[in-house]
Length: 492
Ligand code: NAD
Image 1: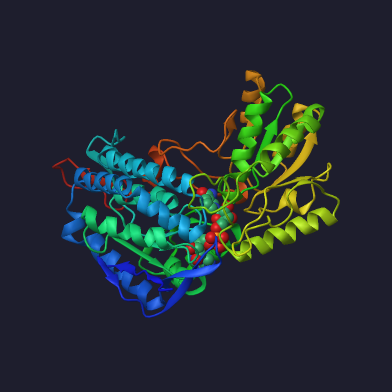
Image 2: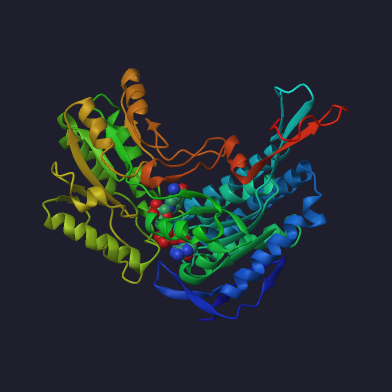
């Protein structure tokens, strides 16, 4: 089979790569494309191009309104090409086509949102406490941004970085994950078509230990925007000890979903299924810890088991498929290890726990539910699996539910299912997480900030404030008096 060849996009041109690696279709386990493995020299070229572009007339002299129009055009192009990009993402990551099509069409709205925001991010005038001074605050682009994303939802996770960064006037070197980079490398064509000046957006892929390390420690990089796992985040933070880049981190989670006995149980069961089995559980916001009121535990688990066993597993390119494979063999091995340890440690298997029959070539894993039997220390309760595995704990009181929900170093997302409005508010107030969904799950929007507490990260993406994180303020003092400067040895 001829492999499809992809290139890096550096300084406005598609590069013939010097080093390549093969990308595997997770639904078959076979290679389908060659990807460029960006070297440190490639990274240096991309960062130098971004640095040149930052100060170039073609970019620096554009008004914020003109930058905004480019972003809106990019959003329109993403929507127009959503089907093609979705097919590539599904091919390269195994994420089902139903989800990639819908998600990528919505990615267009993220670019449109930040395009609209570009000329609405204002500076300020300070009513200064000195009669002979005028002080204004100018928000200026922070500089060259190194954006690093993981393999799941790469177009989406890039949009929340590229959108505010470009709106603010920064330039960007974006590193796609070495797993499933095809949609981002193809997206580079749209950046080109939208008319962004050469060097303003550079997109490459490669491995973390060389390409990612060089990019995030590069002396010309002023800002790092990272999404990925907590252990990589530590490496990134140590990389930025070299360039002292301002860094935001969007990391993993072990998100609780709390189901009270008074909830609409059928709707809650659907939300729990959406939270853990959508995207085969490979979502940072996966609701992987079910906390269920003890009085309804048996009934609720029966519902969940029926729903989990009815999930249509299959070819991710088939629109009827509800769960595809995991993205990598490595990911499946990790899940198998944790599930094995959890069952050996006393967990009770409700359903799944194995590779589904009839899907031998691909990296499939069955929807799995494990009753942790009140053992909050089981590995499946504590570890982020990034897979379709739900662990279950029971609670008797609201206070106990809240304590269990917060019994994790993570704090990314959470769900609460109840018909009692007061209880919903109390839980929303008490949960330590960046997102609380009440009687729903996995809802996102460019208008709403997103980010974690604790080990789930630092900083927020999305919403009005995200653009602020890509600017730094400059205070401009202008003395209005014509009198000579008074005593030069006294601070004014
Ligand atoms: P990962 O941390 O292994 O890799 C993420 C990126 O970091 C990749 O591009 C990788 O090449 C790069 N990288 C690896 N080592 C590096 C280094 N030393 N220096 C610089 N870059 C380096 O993550 P993954 O396995 O691809 O993705 C899964 C993780 O991402 C999960 O923990 C998941 O929860 C998290 N995630 C978080 C969010 C969020 O918004 N909070 C969204 C999606 C995924």
